[in-house]
Every structure is written in C-alpha cells, then in structure tokens.
Amino acid sequence: MAETDPVRQERFILRSEGLDLRVFAAVPANEEVASPCVQIHHGGGGFDPLYEQMAQQLARHGFLGVALIHRGYPGSEGCQQYGKGEVRDIGNLSEELRRRFDVDPERMAIIGYSRGAHSALLALERYRDFCAGVLWSPPVDMARHVHVHPWIQDIIGGSPDQVPEEYACRSPLGAVEQISCPVLILHGEQDDVVPVEHSRLLAAALEAEGKTFELEVMPGEGHVWSQGGLLTVWRWTGAFLERYLMAET
Image: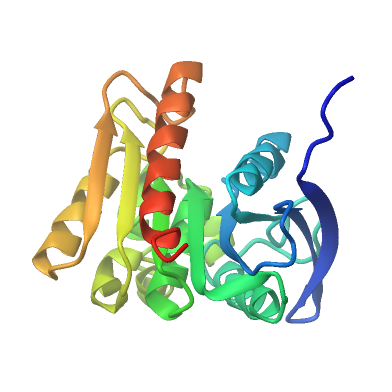
C-alpha cells in the first residue's frame, strides 16, 4: 500500500488592492507547530505546476510552502505592472501569512525566478518580513533590461528617456542598501533572456554595501534550467533555506 503524503494542500484567495489573487499552500504534517514559511514567485512565463511541486517539497522538509499567481496572469485578476503592484501584493501576502497560526512570522523567506525574482528583490528592499531571499536569474536594472525586451515599454508606459522615474522605481539595483537579510543569487552563464550581467551587478552592489550574499553562476545553463541544472539550484536553495530558517529548531 502506498504511503499517504503527509503534506496537506490548500488553495485560497488573497484579496490585494481589490484584486482576487490565487494562492497555493503546502502545509507540513505537524500543523500544531508554527513552521518557517517560504513564498515562491513565478517568472514571466506564468504559473506552472512546478511551483506547486516546489511548495510541496518544501513542506516535506518542514517549511510551509506558498506559491502566488501574480496579478495579470490566468487564475488571478488585474493587470501586470512589472514591479509595482506585484510587490505590494507580496507585502499583502506576507501580512496574510503572518496571521496564520501555523506560520512562524520570525522565519519567513522568499524565492523568485526571473520576473518573480525581480519582484522578490524589490520586496526584500521594501519589507522587513524576510530572513532569507533566493533569487533565480533576476533582472535588476530595468533600463538595461528593456534594451533586450522592448515590449516592457508597453507595461511601463514608455522608454527610459520618456518615463525615467518609472524605470528607477522598478530597478532594485539602486536600493540594495535597504536589504536586511542574506541573499542567494543563482544565474545561468548562457542566459540570453536575463543576461548574467544583472546578477553580477547585483553582487557587486551588495558587496559594496557589506551585505551577506552568495552568487553562483552556472556554466552552460541558460534562462530555463536544464534538468540537471534545476536539481543543482534546488539543492543549493534548500541548503540556504535550511541554514537561515531552521537554525532555531
């Protein structure tokens, strides 16, 4: 007889700025104990079952894993803003999670991939909710990023010359001094969607501010991890979260 999965799955609606946003949660077996909580934020390609699988794997290791479908993507309401409303939604999600009896509010972390890493990084700068952050392939300089992806202008409302303030407020590279927790940055060396230069610039800025961080550049990997690459970044991610969220258990 197959063993019963000890992880309980849960789906709920986060009400944020008048929008209904869908959330998936994977809760560890020992629900009587407040668990460390890890948010997972998807990339620009949208929500994928992989994110639910990540949350469930985290729950099997004692974390309460949470995956949000961001505004403007199928399953959630609203329009994409690429680094404005999405960041406020993360803050509202954190508030919602802090009210749960099964979440330890002093042990919360955040993971983001690509555009989700961009939002996660902005959230790390804005909020003090997190004691660890993991960024997979984050864009950090929007004026640089729009040259690779001109369609971003349609979301932001113009070019960097036309609306410089909109690019500045969406560029986390300019506010790393606000980060108060350790950060792990993982990036593929051959990434042509978000070039690895973004993570190298971020690492240099964090180092200049004396922040605690780790940067791992993966040779031969592009923007979408290979199967082996994904296993490696997931192992590094898990070890990083264990180090900073499980120390008190």
